[in-house]
Image 1 (tube, helix red, strand yellow):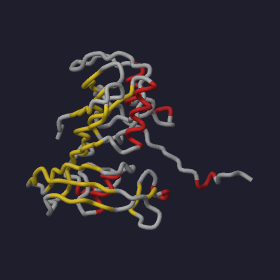
Image 2 (cartoon, one colour; image 1 turned 45 degrees about the vertical axis):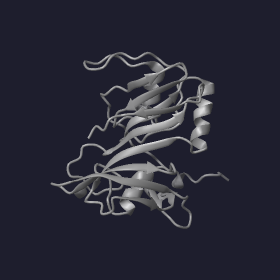
Image 3 (cartoon, helix red, strand yellow; image 1 turned 90 degrees about the vertical axis):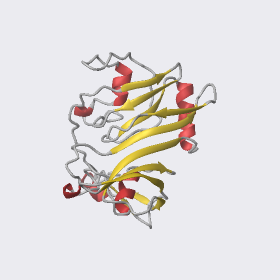
Image 4 (spheres, helix red, strand yellow; image 1 turned 90 degrees about the horizontal axis):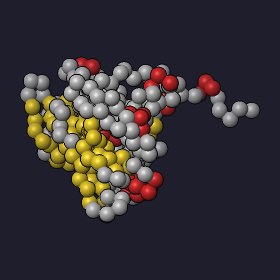
Length: 241
């Protein structure tokens, strides 16, 4: 008897449109890169052969110059200790050798890496700051979505602080500091407390997106210990929206 039922297998037919923006290198040394990932680019190449383009593919193979961006070399040993969603832009740390990658992976597992995100939310968030606590589980019926589930979900915590509230339409720019790192955590937590992220194709209605052409979620800051020196490093990517 087969161990898996083909009728229950998840099929992902998503094909990513071509991303015309290069990965920007913010910092480089012998051990790490800090890069700025554009919105609309996969972190890793997908199982579908049409989804070969990704941050990892571009770093390993190098990038050609564009009218506004210089050529980048091939970093053949590049490894991604963490990922950003397809629609999320912002700063990522890359390991350039096995020792550095192992150190970064361990820091993410130990939750000593700190990350901050900027998100534009629908409506005005009432409290100036707070914490969202809601457990997250996979939603096999609606792949690739996740869901809030108090029975099977894993603990997930997201701190937030208001940056500013905007009019016409009503929306709120918030800074998120996730305590945990669950898949789609900030997207589902934003929906859970009644203010979905604008431009979100999975957890927001088209009526609430206010014409947003991209997911309005940006990884602005990352803090980690340098794999060789132990120095606390701060990577920053300015807000694009």
